[in-house]
Image (cartoon, rainbow, N blue to C red; front, side, top):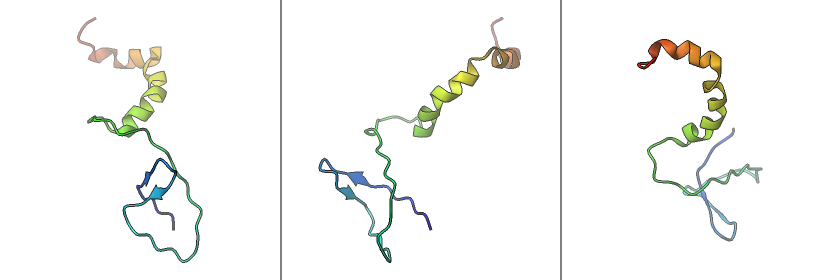
Length: 73
């Protein structure tokens, strides 16, 4: 079973987990290093997807599809 656990990596590279995890044997793990937390009300997933989605948002077809909602012509 795959589990996702939030943890912290200290300056020496030691991984610290806030919960005690018991495994029957050693396991492989994936570690994703995140930027420092910022004081923002914007979800991180929204920030990460903005660049990719902007490619679609800025197409002429998208502008035409949403034109009827524009208040200024």
